[in-house]
Amino acid sequence: MVEILIAALAGYLLGSLSGSLILGKLRGVDIRKMGSGNAGGTNALRSVGWMFALGVVVIDLGKGALAAVLVPLAIIAAWAPDADPIRLGAVAGFSAVIGHVWPLYFRFRGGKGAGTAVGAVAVLAPWCILPLLLVWVMTIVGTGYVGLATVLAGLSLVPTMWLLGPDPLHPALGALAIALAVLLVFTHRGNLDRLRSGTENRFEKARLLKRRRR
Image (cartoon, rainbow, N blue to C red; front, top):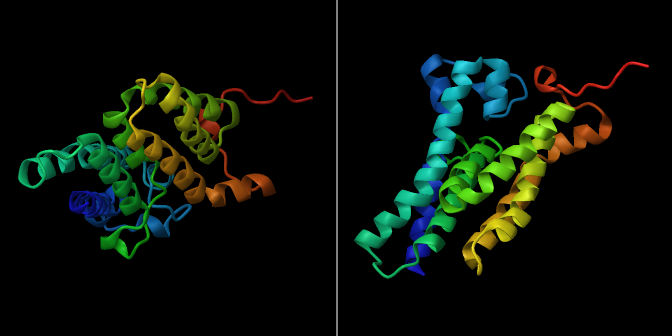
C-alpha cells in the first residue's frame, strides 16, 4: 500500500510541471491570461504559436510517459522489488494527469490533461494510441472542434482498452481507462457547454469537411 501512495505522490509532483507555464515563464508570458485561459497545447498554439505549442506538447506528453515508466522502476528498485509495475505505472500516470490539471507549483490552475494522459497511455497501453488518434483527427476534420475531439477520443479509450488489449486485461489498465475518460469529460465540461449553446470556437484551418452552402 505504501508503494501506491509513493507512486501517486511522485506522479502528481511530476505532472505539476506544466509545459506551457514553464515555457511561458521563460518567455515572460502567462498563457492562462491569453486566449481561452487554458494552460494546454491548443491555447498555446492559438495564442503564442506552433513552436511554443510544440514545446508544450513534448513536455506534457513526456511527463505522462516518464511518470508511468520511471516512477514504478524507481519504487521497485529502491523500495518494493515485488510490486506490480503496471499497477504502479497506472497510479503514477493518472496522478500525473491530476497534477497537470491542478498543478501544485502553479496555484492549482493547469491544463485539461489530454497530452499527459496520452503520454501515460502510450507506454502502458500502446495499442490504444492509433485508434485514439484516428478518432481525434476524424472529429477535428469533420467538425473543427478540438475539445469535442478530445472528449470523444477519451471516451473511446474505454472500449479500445478492452477490445484491443491482452486477454485478460490487467485490472489497473481498465481502471485507468475509465478514470481518464471521466476526467477528460470533466475538464472539458466548459467546451461541452459551449457546444450546446453554439458558442464553441472552431479550429477552422483543420476543418476540411465543411458544409456546402445552399
